[in-house]
Length: 435
Image 1: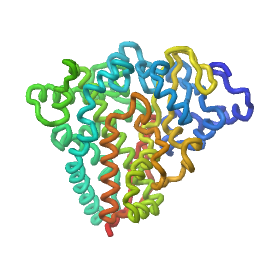
Image 2 (image 1 turned 90 degrees about the horizontal axis):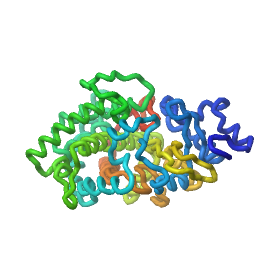
Image 3 (image 1 turned 45 degrees about the horizontal axis):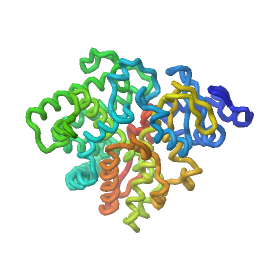
Image 4 (image 1 turned 90 degrees about the vertical axis):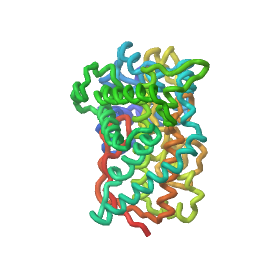
């Protein structure tokens, strides 16, 4: 098979023909309003694991990498498959690449330098320091949700729990007022809109920057940058013990974050720390509603909660894909790839790879934590810096659901986010009971 050609096997060609099977358009944001297209991804894994996918928003298309083994190869080999030419499914000019540059869009020594400057506040030791405050935030939200349940008969667990929980934790760590949390959630939602095919107002939030120079092509990124700039300037003048002060004052061998690097990291922190954890929690709660016996398993054996945390993250797969760009002519799974080609690694497929996970479409809190899932960029230099905080928030939620005897029942249809990047849930009606 040569670059951009279909395989010679007629069975495989039929399985991946987008004209014959429109559902195979795994880049279509609308597809994910129905959830991850597991059947389409399974056909790709079995028949064409490195598949040329035509795509109008690119230089003709991209290579879709769908198995866990191949995804791991790409993730670990940043020399061959770079992040520096952007990680989403649209073309960027060199100017836009430079303007958007953040931790996730650097490789090699620049990436190592940034990680050294921002890692300290996210160590496991620091996570232990956040635990009491995080549990207090969670208990308050659970109390409020149960009160609302008593008044209304049902609740939207996204609005009352999975949306406010991560952002309240973040604003607490950042040392900013809780009242700013709603605004940051709103901006995060608008960034997700940028990964859909909906039109946006380029002048929203007073933005005058061309959208191509902003993350997610969204004016909400401008608003987040401005928020971060004001906050950074304030903490430079009056540092405290909060996360922003630690990032602003962090120094390694005399090196510090520039103002531009700080605001890019702040934007990434708010989006990733809020959106991915919210998505994991929303999908995890839905999974427990659809499989209530799994919550009973945790009640009978709470020692399984660490396993359950990893199963929730695998099942949710908050980020559906990341893009890389081939730096040289190369080969993957026997498929020639040309320098400059886009190579898109699909976590939404690899986390359900039958070759890696037994019965992957079964939600099972007993599932061993090895082999590891690939959510949060588990392998390679781009593993998620905030993953320990996400795991802390999910673990505490599961512990409190068990300790407080809270049961959940789905009360209406799920409304999913229209995005080919985030596996989000916008609304999840439910009935709760505390035994």
